[in-house]
Image 1 (cartoon, helix red, strand yellow):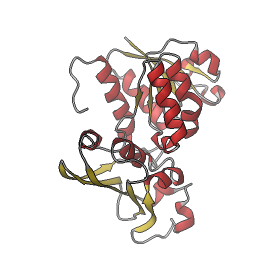
Image 2: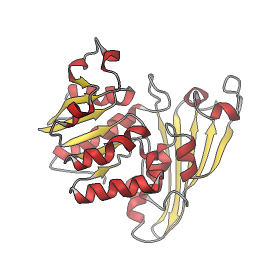
Image 3: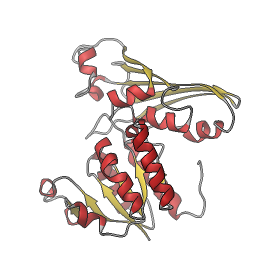
Image 4: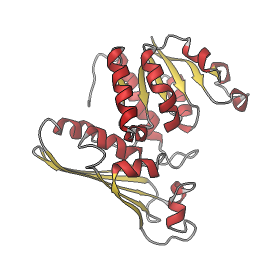
Length: 267
C-alpha cells in the first residue's frame, strides 16, 4: 500500500482524493492532508484526514507527498518532504523558475535518495520533448489560450477588459522564465515544458485571452534533430478553479498508478 500525504485541498486536491476513494487508483491511501486552516473544512468528508499543524503532518511516514497548494507551498515544503524520506510530486512547477530553489530541491532529492516528480498535468508531450534532449533541439514554443473567465484575478485584467473582449488578445509574449512568474496559476505548463526541454530562458511563450475558446488550450511546437512535433491540447476547465483543469488531478493519479503497477507506459 502506497501511503500518501497531500498538501492543499483546493480543486486539484479534492479531485485527487476523490479519484483515490473511487478506487480509480488501487493500492494507494491518503493518510493526511495539510491545510492552512482546518476549521474552514469542518463538515467536509475529508475533515478527519486534515491537520493545519506542519509538525503533526510530517510526523507521518509517507511514501509520497503531493503538493497542490501553489508556489509558496513548494518553497515551504519541497526540501522538507524529500529530506523526510518521501518522494515529492508537485503541480506548481512554475516555482522552479527560481534557479536556487530548483538546485536546493535537486540536492535534497539526491542526498536523500528520493525523487522530485513533475507530472504532465495540463500539458502533454513532455516524454517526447525530454527524450529529444538526448540530441539537439532547435526550438520549443508554447502558445496558451484560455477563455476570459480563466484569467480573473491575474494581470490579464490589466491588459484587457475581460468583460467585453471580443477577439483573441495577446497578453504576454516572451520567455518561460518571466511568464511563470507573471501567471503562476495559469502557465505552470510553460515551466514543465522548459524543464523537460531547453530551459526557461530559451523556451518561447505566447499567452492569449481568447473569447473564441471554451477550453484551456495549449499548443506546443518543437523542432530539432529528432524531427518536428506540433501538439494541441484542449483541457476542460475545473468548475471550481477555471485556471486549472480536471486533467491535472488525473495526471497525478497516473503517477501514483505507475508506482504500484507492474507495467509503466508513456514516460
